[in-house]
Image (cartoon, rainbow, N blue to C red):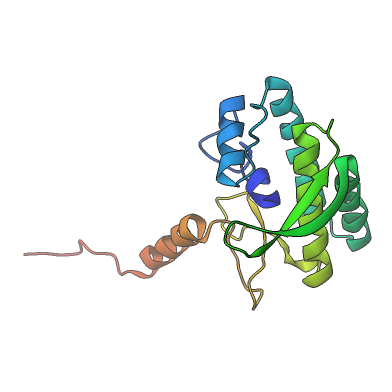
Length: 179
């Protein structure tokens, strides 16, 4: 969630701002199963989420684990009452974070992102917060792979572009001589 939000930025996407309006924010939330039945995102919500996006990027870029823990913890404390587990419709355990009733949409997202970042920091380390290896991308990701060797924020897009460019660079040039 953290990197998906960060990677909606025009700094990352050549297509420009991926969250230009409240409707785009609503789609982003729905894609992450975070749509709220009680309210539709407003322009104020959008502004707060865009500000949160910058905060999250700064946390991901920090090289100081203590700073990451402190800042991710601050995200959790924004509106968090407490994380817990509950069963989803399929009976599987999933995180459930209770937030204060008056919490803004951005604060609710901050809590979820903060809990996720703290979990990664504890189980995998700060070294798993990475920049995309593609020279044409400014994206970030959290490498949760077992081996810890992921290189691209969007392997299907960024990784494929690099592989195609490398393949083309290795091909012999044609068009020399002819019949």
